[in-house]
Length: 341
View 1 (spheres, rainbow, N blue to C red):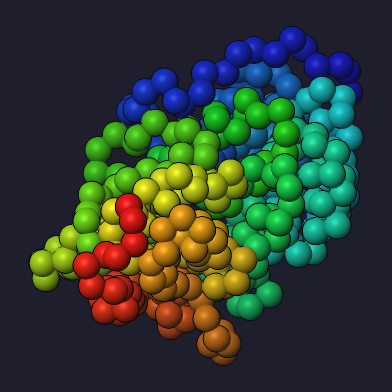
View 2 (tube, rainbow, N blue to C red):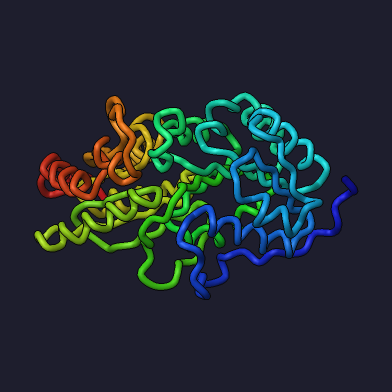
């Protein structure tokens, strides 16, 4: 492969709202469209595939000289990507989340994050979004792994329309990143234009003064919004804080929400250990102690195949679970907010 051509500047999404034509409903389709558009602007973009299906057509047919299939060999995928990044290219390495964060953790840690090279790991089928494939394809530990790898930027868009702006922002980074995507379409979380996407900045989706619902990921954010609407009908003012960048984490926004409300509930498509709940609890304990309850995938997984939302509900993550947790958290809060705000 020849040396890369001079880079073409790609405009990031922090200049204004991401308005425009609707994107495909599914996250993978929205991502492929965004990556192909990015490649048309920047000749450094290289697509590396692990036999996921779809990229060979959407990207490979248009840019065959910049499409590389390593097959189902995730360790090789990351090592080859690191070598291309060392040559000045911008590789996008694609695999399922469970294989990115568990099967190839050593190469992710040493070849990608350890070198600080600008490899973009794109992890699909995250959480329980591959519910129809069964337990081998669930991924409920990847945020714990990636949060622990110093220097890795981690992004979790909440709906398909956030993916293009997120990709544009990640493209400008000089270091490695991990983009966590689901598999199939989920409800949109933004009523109008997508807010400006800025790495490391939380988004307040609902204002509120009683309890804060901190959510990460498509269905968790949707559940938090539905729970906030139900709480409002019961006279409870719930703030909804979306975390689209677990790393770097917006500790200031969480500390401010903790100081302004009586309790917090975290909502995530992940195990309770090492994910969003831990990140929030660390900040709250240090800055404005309040009750923090976690809505996360807990206990053994059901021994059945189900759809995405059904499996999440069966494992304790739903709008009803968020609503109940908010009421429990408020009941635990000391009266009168005795802590300084």
